[in-house]
View 1 (cartoon, rainbow, N blue to C red):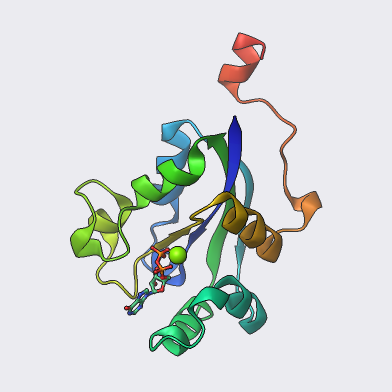
View 2: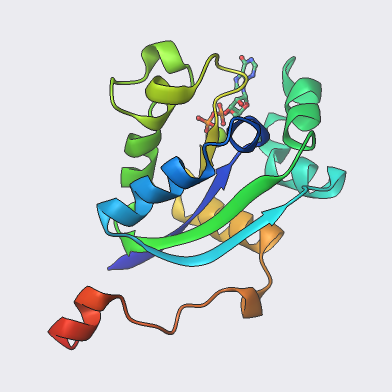
Length: 151
Ligand code: IDP
Ligand code: MG
């Protein structure tokens, strides 16, 4: 069954002009992008997003980082997309990420690691609601493959 996940190209990804390359990976994989926008996260958005990390030593820097410039926020739909997008991203520490993953290929360190992806159905729903209004999600259209196959 199709799932939705929240993907964000973090400020370092935008500042390094990697938007196109990263969006392309999700398009080429065959996922359906049903929400997409550039926005500057507010302090409130960042705090909600990373509430699970509040109190950890890296939390203040994480909040600074994520509010330091625009992000590209995406809602991506597909079968098993939550788990597979995390695989495409690679592990949090780029040096532990597999060759060919987004973080291995582009990230310079654990702190500035280019991309965020939800880690569960519950996180995906929660994170999508932080960054998107329901009417900003365009779910009611068919990819070319769906059109041709008449599904
Ligand atoms: P994830 O993004 O792979 O899910 P989390 O452990 O949820 O990783 O951490 C959220 C984000 O916080 C990371 O992507 C990274 O930007 C930052 N971060 C995590 N651990 C550290 C750390 O030990 N030092 C600095 N930044 C960290
Ligand atoms: Mg996480």
